Amino acid sequence: MEELRGRVAVVTGGGGGIGRAMAVAFAKEGMNVVIGEIEMDMAAEAVAAVEAEGARAIAVENDVTDRASMQALADAAWDGFGGAHVLCNNAGVVTFRLAQDMTEADWDWVLGVDLYGVIHGVQAFLPRMVAQGEGGHIVNTASIAGLVPAATPGIVSYTTAKYGVVGLSEGLALDLAEHGIGVSVVCPGGVRSRIVEAGRNRPEEYGGPEPLNRVEGEGVPQTIIEPEDLAARVVRAVRGNELYVLSHPETQPAVEARFAAILGAYDAIPAG
Ligand SMILES: NC(=O)c1ccc[n+]([C@@H]2O[C@H](COP(=O)([O-])OP(=O)(O)OC[C@H]3O[C@@H](n4cnc5c(N)ncnc54)[C@H](O)[C@@H]3O)[C@@H](O)[C@H]2O)c1
Image 1 (cartoon, rainbow, N blue to C red):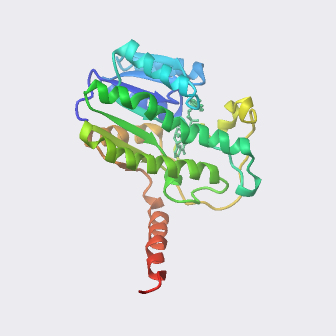
Image 2 (cartoon, protein in one colour):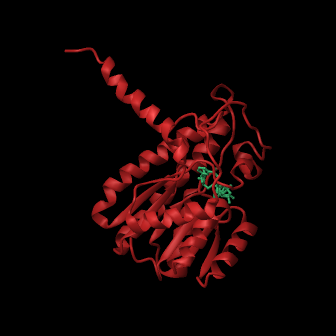
Image 3 (cartoon, rainbow, N blue to C red):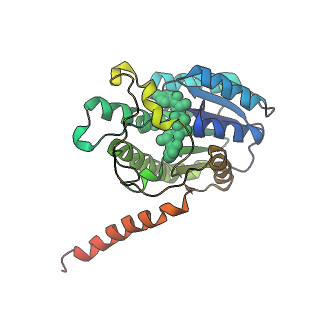
């Protein structure tokens, strides 16, 4: 999608970290921005940052785990700006816990936000984007944890969700090509943000707020990059319709090792 000026971007989790940086980056390109957030004071600040770029922005209280809330976010885009062209399914949370220690609430929360949040975004926006007939782009924020299982210790639920986001994005790209709607799946390593404090907003129905709960161990080495640098990379990917958006070269050996292990398994198929 080459022409961004005057068009509309929607960003879930747009009040902080990567989401806020994407909102500002799209504003710099002349887009109007709808910011969905559960933390409304952060959303208000992000609106101010977008407006400082000369763009228009609205903040919408939104919970991506809730289908009706995602439909309301789409309503806000169409009511406020007449449509949506770039949808960034970005909101995400993490809890650090080994598989054997996971509770049902842990699984429900992480998959509810990180995987179902993206599915709900697709369900709420895609039929309207297709009917709008103006093309567009879907940006799904996965993670390097969507490509390798042990990016960081204790994130089996996050890995499960992010692999789902990568698979969903690859499938979407196939389904949407004929409608001029592109897809990018963003797979960064470490990015400066408050993601490790995600438990501060963990709803009561998913076990309630929890403090930072790291698991000891080695992950894939990752430098920490600035969200603004990742956001600039995303804008380029939207323009160029790039499916995979990678940002951390040092994660490449881990991805290669995983694919080599999968390809190597073909050698174990009995002959005949
Ligand atoms: N920071 C990293 O190192 C990193 C690396 C790879 C991928 N990611 C992914 O990037 C995305 C953005 O995370 P971030 O790092 O900017 O973290 P962040 O915590 O700064 O931002 C996430 C935002 O999502 C919001 N949010 C949480 N639950 C929500 C819900 N139910 N509905 C709507 N909004 C909700 C939060 O309030 C927050 O503003 C996530 O999908 C995350 O998994 C982050």
